[in-house]
Amino acid sequence: MTKSGLIEAVADRTPHISKKDTEIVVNTIFDSMASALREGERIEIRGFGSFQVKVREAREGRNPKTGEPVHISAKRTPFFKVGKELKEMVDAGRHESSPSSDS
Image 1 (cartoon, rainbow, N blue to C red):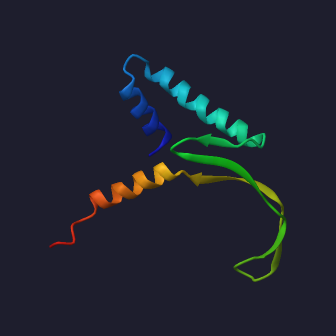
Image 2: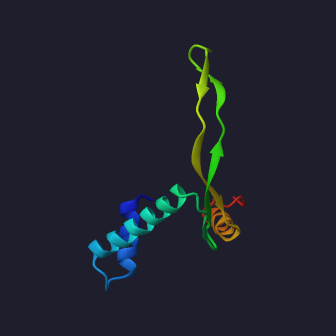
């Protein structure tokens, strides 16, 4: 699903809100989440999962083409941990749509 697909889905479920306003709401949510992560805050959406920033220390890597050592700087990277309910919903959906093995 893309961001525009998400906006469409929300707009379909909320016909009393214009599509433009729906787009503003979705963008505001994503902007707020990005801002919170930039500030080092943790985001928890119950039943879905949590986002947090993990720090990856500086290290030495290798250029895969030449094999030369390369310095990789420290960086902060977003990390998502899936919630139990979402994990179960995804797994249940897989079983429903998979072909039957009784054939």
